[in-house]
Image 1 (spheres, protein in one colour):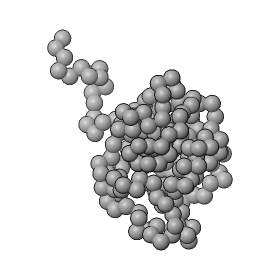
Image 2 (image 1 turned 90 degrees about the vertical axis):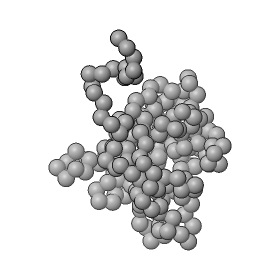
Image 3 (image 1 turned 60 degrees about the vertical axis):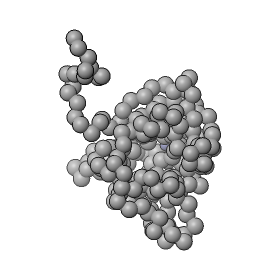
Image 4 (image 1 turned 180 degrees about the vertical axis):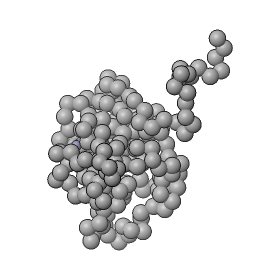
Length: 192
Ligand SMILES: [Zn+2]
């Protein structure tokens, strides 16, 4: 992290455009006049990344082991709506992305559909569930493979993670209330 709070750019990401010193992910939507909006997804590129096994941040082929950023409700279904990342691209993302880094309490109050109206850009999350909703806990899900499916809810390509394809799951951000580090998980209500 530099003194300005902007993380240094990885060599792998130097080919990507930047906005305010932050790398624009490969799947981020772009308006016709070339502007990027963080948090918006180009659904065509998101689909291509999943089909081609490309990293959603750098747009390059994935290594043998990669990382998904998954919300709790996605993890419950074992379905990742967005392509995974190189481990180093993931680490850059959780440093640079305010949502993943836990620095944003809520999604932006309004969506970006107005910005992209008439541009031909297809945004992800067409149901528009994200804007204004409380931010959810995110998990880092390490995997070595995934199964390409069509998400039965969103009707978009998604990655189904079978149990033997998952290597490790770690929370990225904790719950809203700070936890006592001396208290083991799930110990509340259990009498000694
Ligand atoms: Zn990458």
